[in-house]
Image (cartoon, rainbow, N blue to C red; front, side, top):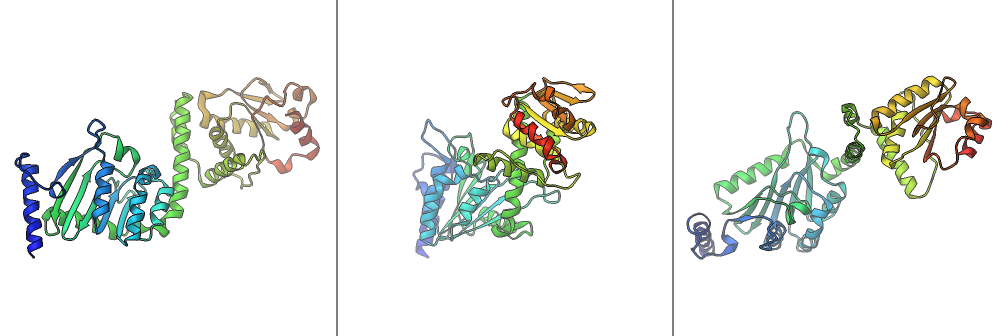
Length: 365
């Protein structure tokens, strides 16, 4: 009990320094303090988190965003805690689809860490906590403020955090622990194995949408509808698979999907992901060519030129050319193009385009 009383006295002195008189000498380990990133003073939030992890006997973290770059500088410390059997609980969220699945997998792979995800929705509202709780015997040190577990947040961003030092019986500590426990036990907080597969797919979907929007901005695609377009699961999977095939230098792909599932939009999303400038889309009827052209305009807006090549139209110089099979089978049309004219060729309804007609088109381009 004497040891506890000594710590309380030390803690009281630290509180006096922090809140009453900065000239009072006290032990920094028991003193509340302001924590920020300040390169001029050599201060980083990361250093404070590392120090508390290294001396704690148990830790609890609740942050909205976790990235691989954010946990990388902490991994060695976390592995040391794993070796020492220091338990930890980390709670994050799917809010804004920002946390990186690879980072979550790294954390979940540590035997001493239990990881959960709070799944947000209309009934829960957002989730934007940033709190780090460390217990050393009967003393709690809690860092609360603006820093997520991202590299920028813990090393260089303008972040404001407060470190609170308290006994377990302190009212503030009791409130924080109770809030964490309620969130941890909430029905919306899912264990790693229960959320990771679905979240990984949703994250890839959102990542592609963000990239599409960034490209739309850079290409001055200002139509509002283009920002609202969201690929469905089939389209996301298709684009992902094509990009993986390209990385393996495979230059042909086949998409099999039912009518009405969005194959035309899937091909448009693919071209946007690839950054394609010129493409040829071949169909067997002019009506389908017109419909496909409209779909592409929804994705690319005014960032490309579009043309029809059919019995009623010959817009040969367009960046995205939508042609009928009949027109592309004509020698006079094929001779207009060289193999370098198109980055990508897409054949619609590949199985019904006759082999005899198909072969000269592929040879010509």
